Length: 470
Image (cartoon, rainbow, N blue to C red):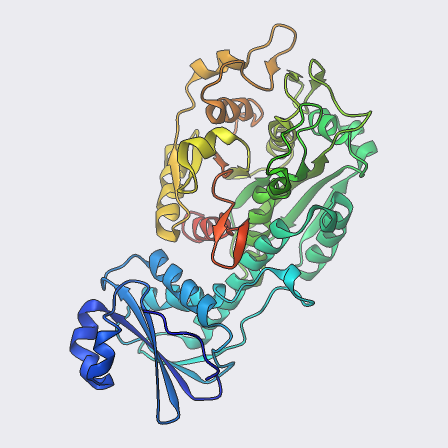
């Protein structure tokens, strides 16, 4: 049961986390009347105010609840009560939680303070509360640092995905990335249209040619201090707004197409966290920035373009622009950078949405070890994936009569698989690649917004993968 919010932030506060089992053995400490309103069930909250102090009772249900569900409960609690939580010196009674559970809950408290930024005159709300908690063998400094870094990283992801289209056009985003790179000690390289033409990034340029904005094929590199560090390649689809081009989308819900850069924002969040926490890995990230606009210069259905790797693509649908930009990004990264792992994330197909809704991303990989590691990290963080096949039979569906490939299949089935198989043709001989279609999970229903908004999907998945796989 949730009590109505009142102004009690001036009183000393304590957070108490109870499973149903632990509440039964502790409820006498709080007095009999409370038992009628609180029982320790999952996501059950109660505020007990007495003698000039405030006790927040937070129910988690079963004691062995997964860490990511515990984080979600904390996010929900923090979001609901964020206006009434003290800025500092709040006591956290964590005696009922393991060290890992406490860390997840603590991070959730921070993440729950996120608010949609365009309702306020200041940037994303930063959590300022400090918790002095009752627990042994837990480093307060390390836990606080991790939670703060995660809030910054995931808020960065959500902020840029939530921005209206005119607040994040390619020029604005490209300028931001210059400052972002300087702040995070990243090497920053960007190719304009002329440079892209010289290099042969023609699949990317086909999408960009209809844009009012300059091409910005962007490479961000994080170099670890560890000389023996492995290198991961990350590519995030970065279409700042997708009209569908000449194959224009319907007007209903087109405003949500500001979310077509969810892959890029996930990569940015992971980069920000890795840099702040000084990860012992190297990261090469490519963001092929453009919008997919309608103009007299837009690329057309029936156009044939040559990708960076020399393969030709027949354009049947200009709304399949993501696989065009990602094809060149994959080909460029695999040819010019040595990476142990190559992962791309993209809000790519409606097919993935129809298949999985908002429960998980569609995953494809040519390496069983990488596949299993991503599944493990997804289950651990709650940012789940489901593996789908890359059988060669799917290649027949996008073989063209006038070029090497078509950018879509003519069949009304399996488009997320066709798209993944298409992208596979541009990874060179890379033996350790995975593609994540995150169209259904990057943008959706969230506690902090009445409308669909950024979920932050991909940030914690990539962080955990880099921490445990590389």
